[in-house]
Every structure is written in C-alpha cells, then in structure tokens.
Image (tube, rainbow, N blue to C red; front, side):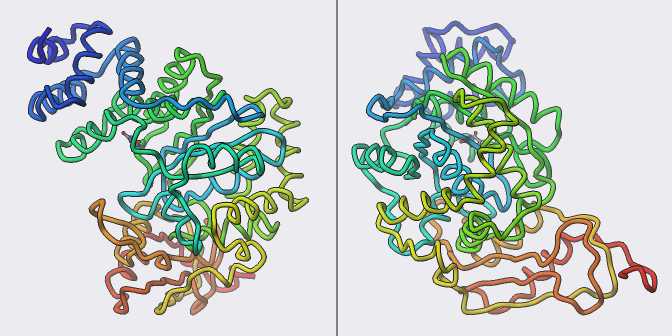
Amino acid sequence: MNAIDIINKTKRKIQLTEEEIKYLVNGYTSGEIPDYQMSAWLMAVCLNGLTEAETVALTLAMRDSGDILDLGCIEKITVDKHSTGGVGDKTSFIIGPAAAACGVAVPKMSGRGLGHTGGTIDKLESVKGYRVDVEFDEFADIVNKTGFSIISQSGQLCPADKKIYALRNSTGTVDSIPLICASIMSKKLALNADCLLLDVKCGTGAFMKTPEDARKLGDLMEKVGKAAGKKCRAIVTDMNTPLGCCIGNSLEVKEAVELLQGKIKGRLYDICIELTANMLELAGKGSIEECAEMAKEAISSGKALGILKETIEMQGGDSRICDDVELLPKAKYSHIIYAPRDVEVIGIDAEELGMASLILGAGRINKDDEIDYTAGIVLEFELGDKVSMDAPIMTLYSDCVSDFSDAAYRAYNALKFRTLTENALT
Ligand code: URA
C-alpha cells in the first residue's frame, strides 16, 4: 500500500478500502506520510467527494487515532450536542443545564474559536476563575453531581483531526462535506456519549450556506453516528441572522444567563427549547411535545439556572454572575449606532456582524491570538422591528479598540432597512 496509489484512486473516483483509509490516517498522524501527499488527497476529496462507506471508515480511523472516553462511570444516560457553529451561538450553556434539569447527563467537551467570535470555551473563560482544563475524573464527578459540565477538549482525543484540520485550513480544503463530517463526528464519537444531537447551522453566518448542503451534511453525520452505534439526529437551524441579540464572549454569557433567568423569549428561546426537546427525546424521556414542555419548565422553574450556577462553582468560576450579570467583565469603550431615519429592520447579515465583532477583538484570526472577552455587539432590536429615527440600533463594545470607525461601518452595513413613511411607527 502506498499514498500515491491512494491519491490516484480518489482522483479517479475509485472507492478506497477501509484498510487504505486507515493506512492514510495512521501514516499521516505518525508523520510517515508527508503534508504534500495528504494535501493532494484532501484536494481530491474536495473535488470528487467520498462515498458514505469511505466517510464512515475515515471518521472511525480518525476517532481511533487517540483516546476514546469511557463514560460508564456516569450514572445517567449521556447526551451530547454539537453545533456546526455560527454567530452569537450560545446555546450550549443554556440547553446543557436545561437537559440536565430534566434527568439526563450532559458531558461536553468544546473548543476555542477561530474566526468571528470565540468558541464555547472562550465564552466560558470570560467567567472569572472558570477552569476549562479539568481532568477526566473530576469532569465525570461534576457531571454526576450537577448533570452538566463543559471542559476543553483533551489533546489525547483525535490527534488525527487536529493535524488534518490544521492542514485543511492552510490548503483550502475545509469546505468539503465528507471532510467536515469526519472531522466533527470523529471528535464526537471519541467523547462517546450515548446520544448525539447535531445542530447544523445554515445561512450566511455558517459553514453551510444553503439548506440543501446543510441537509446533506446533517444526513451524512446522522448515518455515520448510527453506523457507530449511537442514537443520533441532525436538525438544520437558521444562521442567516445571529442567534439572540448579543455577539461576543462575556456578552453571550450574559444573554444566556438572562434567558435562564426567564427574561428572554423570542427566537433564541425557541431554538433552545427545540434543541433540548430533541436531546431529551433521543434519550427516551418522552415525545417531542412532552420533552418541549419539560424543557420550558426547567427554565421557568429556575432549575436550569441553578445547575449552571452549581457547575460554574464546581469549576472554580464566579457563580455570582448567575444572580447578577453585572459582575461579568465589561468593556472600557463603547459606541452607539443610531437609526438614520424611521426604519423597519428587514435584514441582519450574521457573517458581517461577526466580522465587525472580530475587528472589535471578540475573535481570533490566528490560533494564538489573544481574545478580548468584553468585546462585541448588542443589537437593540429583532428582525422585523420598527425603529424610530435617532433611537439606538446597536452598541459596540471593546477593551482594545477605542476607534470604532471600521467596526461601526461594517456593523451598520450588515443591516438592511426599509424606510417607513410618516405614522408607520404607530
Ligand atoms: N468544525 C470541525 O470541527 N471540523 C470541520 O471540518 C468544520 C467545523
């Protein structure tokens, strides 16, 4: 077996065997297969795709490149959720506690973000003291006590994905459905929860720009998950507009806490209920309708907020933020953008707002860049709202940028308005 034959087979659309895929993944992870041969193969996959059987084999070979967790010490049925990422997505620390409040265990490992805003781990690190590097035994202990924990992904999980993903980032081979599927699913299968809900984001602020591609990715991930023996479901949710009103790390924690305090309804709340209901239904807790009612009750009773508070406390974080969000870190500088005339907001481009947040310091361009936890944007309206002239439409925050002109220009242009005629506001 050799890498050149394997590259040629994929180039000619000839299906690879499981052994050939294992040889490629193991050879690249150990350093025997060089970057240039792996890059050539990844480009062949980008252009020609992989069959379902090849994608399953690639995912399992990547999963098996490192540790596979044994969650047998967790007493309740375990449910994991993965979102393919988007702008303002703070659902993990809402639905984790909400599902835990309904009797399942939610052990989550997440990553830091590259791009617009931080990842789930960056967001949680904006809570003073919160430890994300927790050893497995302590992680399992927290999950057994509170039902929920999020920690950063261990370096021993999927080393193959780590190496391949870095190569894809620098060779223009990220946007391939089988490669995205194998990358995400290998990590999820290594975490090894009993049930897995996949939230495939679709729209301008997401990897998948069209509903067709989002469904294709979702269906493929679902098939791979089932082939690996998991209870698995993929749902597609909209990411043309940001999720909620806050974009940026500590701002998103604040919004999540406020939602768990029962102060926020609307689209973010609805999506959280839908996701939690699907997690519970996969775990056999009832029908989707029954599970949605349980999720609502978990939030309205304050039980989910109590679980988040207890988890933050066990991980060393300042859990008082669950009672008083004003204790979260705040930016030194802010800038308000006002409505230029009486308008109706008819479009919010999630990707552009994400780019404006990046300029403010909320995200990273390179993986070692420092992040500004306080930076971001708060929208003062929802899609379809009418705003009168000179009312605030959004506020920009930053600790590291005091000249807001670039970010404000980009953020303002992310909005689409319809001018209202006289009296249309009433
Ligand atoms: N997230 C991942 O973990 N991998 C991809 O390939 C894309 C998104």
